[in-house]
Length: 229
Length: 105
Image (tube, rainbow over all chains, first blue to last red):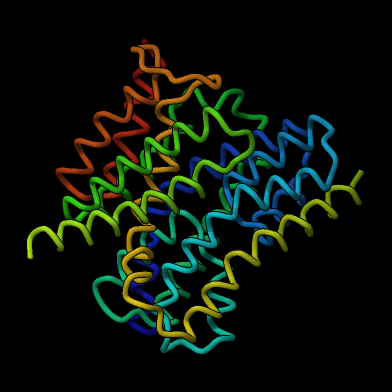
């Protein structure tokens, strides 16, 4: 096994720690909401998107129409479009068919890790393979385990594991902040996301806030250059 | 019933995969203009912050800036540990323990 692959596996360790409790919680909830262990396995294998899986399972149990669950999933996961686009300039050396595989494993968590990695050095397809396969593997294992053992643990949220994902976002966010400009963008994104979430129906807040906040970041950068020169 | 679930999973897979795949495969073939590169470089920070803010600050569809807001309280030690150590594992652990303790109170 190559070093690059192992580096990817190693970088996936914090993701595994985040996924285990969340995946387990999803498995428990989904079973309660009427999904079978096989459904959970298929979902984690083919959809592989935490928040969308939680939402879909809840919609399924409330008897929502299939198309509306699919439409909601699309909206919730549209943010991957931005992540995928932001990785694109750094993977020009990787062949298209490999990129088609790699893209399958882009999640909030793997993106936060790989977008940090591509900023430090040239990242190979093997690195992505190590990172993505390990991450998804742990997601599948934890969700299926939750589905199997779910009824043994009546209320997983009381152990605080429901906060693991948020804690992970906090860690990943602070790892991304390298300059004052990043802090400005972070606050703009947070504010815009709150305003959108409170005033617009659907799951548009992440998309709208990220697009605008990144644009504000570019504008402040351009202005500060103009004034300092 | 089982067919409905399978249809749902197949549909979800397709609408989740396409937005992940299309930009990575297509945009990697082009040289993106510098201004757009700058914009793309801000996306990670912007996305993470936009994901996080409503989790910590909105509860039951309303802004929740009170001491009853457990996620907000639990986030404080997380931010401190993350800023100090930049260690993802430690941050997640501190988050889980803080939330557990808050729920005991």
